Image (tube, rainbow, N blue to C red; front, side, top):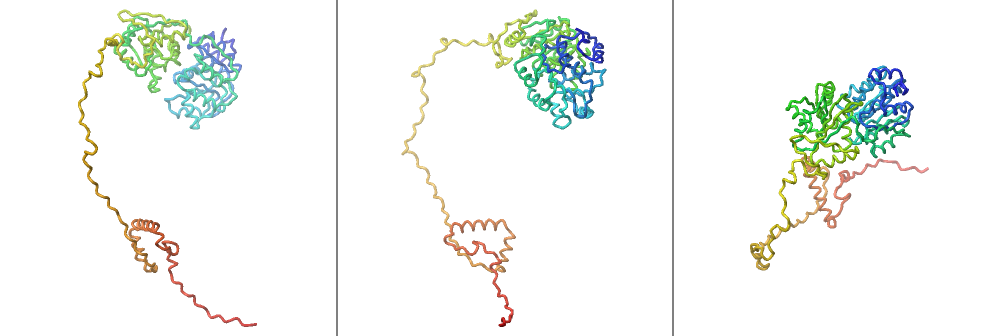
Length: 521
């Protein structure tokens, strides 16, 4: 089948021809007609099979007619990493260059101002990571009530990175009437439950068994001691025809250490991990694509979303903790039908992880050896709690069996403890010093209350209260407390212990005017 038979417009077909493609991949052949029909699609295919073009090509055709309004994008594509979002944006630029369509990329590590300017002009396609999209939504810079098409890409990676709560929150902001496209490289039960919640009567497209590896990739396993891994890696880099390669580590700090080691031994190597600034990550990745860097030592941030053509080798310096990450790592090579080689370096304690990978891909990775290096056996015992620096079991001292240990001395043969001084009887103890009796404070008898004086006579006392009001307040409280205790003995005058001054004034008789007596009628 040709691209011209899928129902795409002439502008899109012209852009495809410019790229040199004529026939679609299996996932594109099945997904593109369904998307053009407006159906919800649940797509599952191994990495490197063209899932990105499977939804970008029909979306360009759908969004070719219409106009976007300010801060109201017409479609939304959610990606787990910045690199994958940038790759999808590049795909839209490549295939939509003959269509008048605007696009915005919302990722972390970039300034808000430039992204807000694009949103204010209106965009047809919005490609974003969940965190930055929620930040702009809470700032009021974007509205999601005009979304016609929603794409959730690399859903299994979203689950691994803990983005599912953010995805559920974003989906709750979108209109109910929309088209949803759900793509994932693996289809775990959790992913299927999410698809049932987000999609409405979807059409499932599966072109390869879940978590399968490409047949064009030659795989090999090398088992060496942990301290011999760097030597084994250098041997493979020197003996293999390596044009360019990804070298994966499980931990970010190991990425920098291994990169510096390779540079010291004369290799052209760069590093890429999540703790690097976005500008540095973009610069390093672009240098690798242009061939300025031959070896890219990276973490799993590069396992997905980095589409570099003609990568000859992939080296797993560490066995991935998750078996599904192995599929994504080696999927960086052998893309678009080209041949590739993948080598995994394992320590003896990595047997459990290797067995999980073999069960997932339903085949055993061929085992090879390197001349001059010991090839120990793999152990499937869980060794996560033992640490890397512990000596192997053969180097530890063997514990003596129980019968060879010296018998403990019998209880009667043990040496008695030093005799302690006998405690004196209670009656022979020295009496304590007699304590002095506590002084009993006897409250002085309260003086009888003086008669209230005239307000004019109280003026000096008022002046003294103004001089020190705090001391007078404490004294009044103490007086009231003592009066409360002896209230039976002291009579209450007037309003209690306080007599308003206006009531102490003497009542002066009002002069009686001379009024004539009433005259009798």
